[in-house]
Amino acid sequence: MANRIPRVPVREQDAKVRATNFKEVCYGYDREEAMLEASRCLHCKNPRCVTACPVGISIPDFIAALGQGDLRGAADIISRDSSLPSICGRVCPQETQCEGSCILGIKGEPVAIGKLERFVGDWQLANPSEPATAEDNGHRVAVIGSGPSSLACASDLAKLGYAVTVFEALHELGGVLVYGIPEFRLPKQSVVAAEIENVKRLGVKFETNVIVGRTVTVDSLLDEEGFDAVFIGSGAGLPRFMGIEGENLNGVVSANEFLTRTNLMHAYDEHFDTPIYVGSRVVVVGGGNVAMDAVRTAKRLGAEATIVYRRSEKELPARAEEVHHAKEEGIEFRMLTNPTKVIGSDDGWVRGINCVRMELGEPDESGRRSPKEIPGSDFTIGCDVVIMALGTSPNPLIASTTQGLDVTRRGCIAADECGRTSREGVFAGGDAVTGAATVILAMGAGRKAAKAIDEYIKGKQFREQ
Image (cartoon, helix red, strand yellow):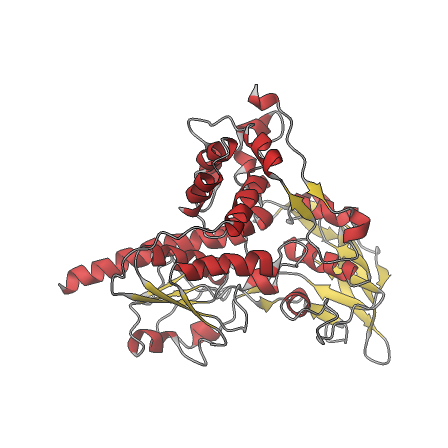
């Protein structure tokens, strides 16, 4: 029986070797491995995996096509709902979404849906076909930001015949896909840039070095530039800090800056002049995927790297795969530990971090058990660099320069589940609305907003007629 076939393992770089380079950790499946893994799918009548996918990919259908060796068919099925399969197959938390809902996972191992999506996505990049485009419907939409929510929104709108222009503040396209996620998890040229090229082939135009709120405003795009609607997918790039003593010392940085220097500005590459300092020991504060990216990057740059997290390993919000890889690479984990002060030397540089041990109490609003300090348990960890990976919030620039655009108390743009904001014709989604979240959730928000924008423009046109 198909469900008795063991899950096909994925080939990876040796941990000791990969901890010294920025080459991709996971090699993925070859054709034979992918088809064997596809044969494990039970093709449920009511597939829970599809319901659990934020963009609604027809998972059993693409797996069935793959299992029959019809790679073009599998790629076409995925393309109906996702414009970034090679990216999602690498970085999405499948274990809590599609794979977490797989029937086979109840008594065994679920189908490796993410790895299969990656295989099909990579095959499609190597064997591109002509995209299905619609006739120009005469309407224009502006998209702010070029991260996952914006790319998903722009793709869906282009397929409906809209003339879409994406405005990106940085000099490279991709948003968090480029500046936030390390090369060893998500190759920039062979994957991110290649998938953005596919979006361009749909007719989407991109303009870089455009800071909305300075170069142009949302108001000017609507009132002067002639766009019928605007989608804000500008992400959440404003880092948070703890507010403890010593955070202004040299050697204390946000994970956002650290990863941007490494990824977008190629600090890890000897052919670039971007400066970056890790010293001999780095402490990363936090337990999410960004913290794992930062600590594993610091390790590759030559430092002894440690994670400090105030809850237990069970409460770590990072993907289990990333935690597993980090441990394999020699990352030290200090659980139930909370920093109280960054220690500096006379020259103003970090020399260590004071911490206190924690214990878990009752669950908080998120359902996780609240950590409490253990009195008298203070201790010090020596280090040269402290990286704060405590989450991010949206930059207030766009909201503060747009008339009638409401924000939440957390500084996020207020929008309903379809992306509609308080300003007519303005929609928003992804991290700009929710705060820092996952790539696939941002894509799901972008797709919902695209549908709402289409309905808004058609409705407005009907009313005018």
